[in-house]
Length: 215
Image 1: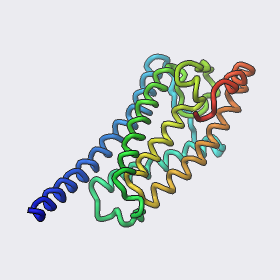
Image 2: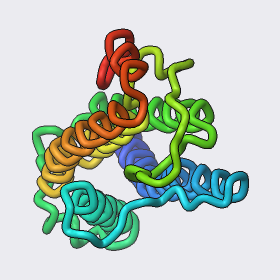
Image 3: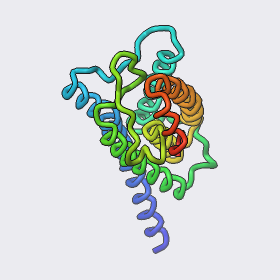
């Protein structure tokens, strides 16, 4: 009787693990679509402006953009490897002592918090949404909704999503992605703050006094 119960539990655990692999794949495909593609398409349709303003120049701003694209590529690589090439997971150097069900549950909560938080922030930004710093087209300073609590809610949401994925798939590659993303986004935030001060002056300084950089 006990052996049959153990077998059923083992089969259930394997089915859950398989489901999680493809759930993560679907999640990140939807996440990147909602966070980057759809808002960018909406702004382009409404204004005719391409919101993706990173270029190939050798500036700190453009270098951070290239770095984030590379890090996103590593995230996609990890999720696809987890879904389709399980035998190669060992090469990502799993961190076995973080393999706990409660950490995976926390990770799932963070992933879903991130996507809803980011969608709300995207909606509140409206036509001010940009990927990078737009030196040509002046944008409105958004101070409503989530922006009352965080000056950079989308960057915060991105970090939360990477942390959530790391808790679900704890490995050395994702840990490195999390650390480098944190550093790169810290730099990008400060570049954008300098730009917003130049563009909005004292209005932005007053905003900084009311809203925190992250949360």
